[in-house]
Image 1 (cartoon, rainbow, N blue to C red):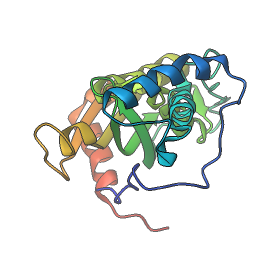
Image 2: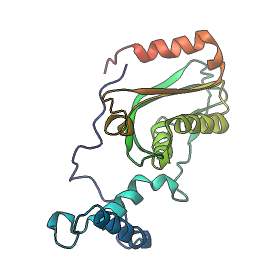
Image 3: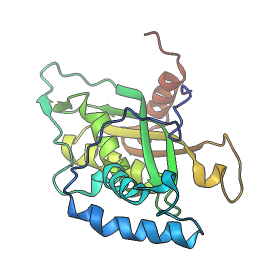
Length: 212
């Protein structure tokens, strides 16, 4: 149903640094990271590969958990549904990356978001922004799915909303049960999507290969 997502473990030296160097939280987090490194029997003072790792990790946490920052929730730009469009609107194959709240390791995959408009429609760029916002925090996939659906239901008051997330969890693949390649699927359903025929239309459209 989905294209293979890029692994979050892939090195990305060109990724932009979105955390300001003067953020006081860096100084609060970094000493704790350095202490963890020492407890593991490593030497951040003598190993050149660990020089500055504590601050890099601190800055990384502030970046990937930026959804916790006040004022970062995206404004949902909506427009009057002047065309009286009452069929399904779907944005699928939306990549997302998040962190498991239980182990602080990544889970990642694709989201599929659908709604049937009532009086207002939403700018399409806001759907992936909304998913990213809720993903950038320690998360549960179940909660992430419900949060996206809940905001769309509250803000748009559509005839219905359905959100499906498919994700790989590194807490399942690289530790514990160690089952690489397993995929977790969650869904949140609102309004007319509770009707079997509407759900089946949505799922059928997800199964169709892209043409672009």
